[in-house]
Image (cartoon, helix red, strand yellow):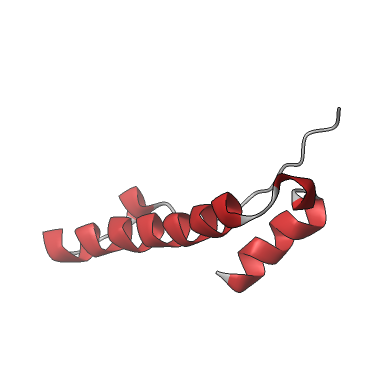
Length: 61
């Protein structure tokens, strides 16, 4: 079959300049963004997993 794919672009947190707290916050922000999208993805019925629904996940999160 044709697998559905998506690209959820996030800024590279390793490129953040600043204090250790600011650097950690950048990693946490990306982690939380990925978690939101993965939670939505995991809750979707398998028959709804197509390219359009993967784009919708990005818009909802």
